Image 1 (spheres, rainbow, N blue to C red):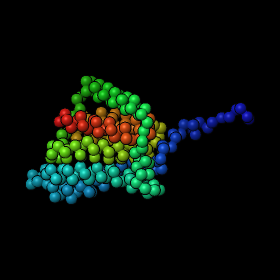
Image 2: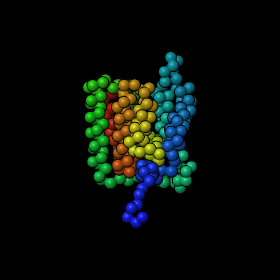
Image 3: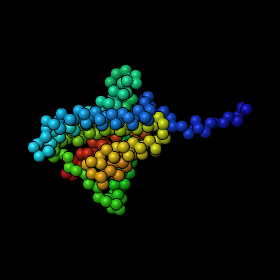
Image 4: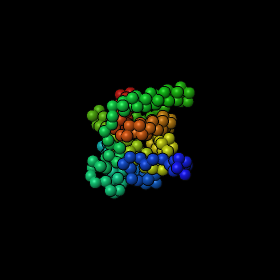
Length: 236
């Protein structure tokens, strides 16, 4: 009857399709596994060639392995986006969240930093001081450390875990659930460098997903990720 329109509650509760994304949650999860596996496979020659007699990696081995990991996180999401009909590099990157953003993103970036610092402070005071392995020394000179830690890692991880994983999860789950799951995956993959640092990294990943949601771009997250890694590098 006119004026008595009802809405199906199932349809109303269904999350909106995330802008530009045309892969689902299952593809996103499998893609992250494939990205990690691709990085490992590409890094095998570096591990074999760049190994010392006592089993440690040389500077070459560490750098090559880090490059392989970053390339895996970059190339697999881009290949999946391309396979789903993206026309060129520009469209592939836009589907993965590399888009322009409005000046209002600055306030959301500030809110993200504040929320993360608040969580990290309470975690350190009430639970444990997070510690991560210092991997920077294994990369040799400072310019190489900056290239790998401040630039490659933030760009590749934001494309993989926010643009690709979170974007795919948002096709099925509401934003908080998708952000939490993407944050857990992001934090868990850093467990080898320090288990006590995993919860803050989960919180960091969760916050960056919500930042992507608010701004429509992963670029603000890349910038904050670069800032975070710069501070960590200077502190080591």
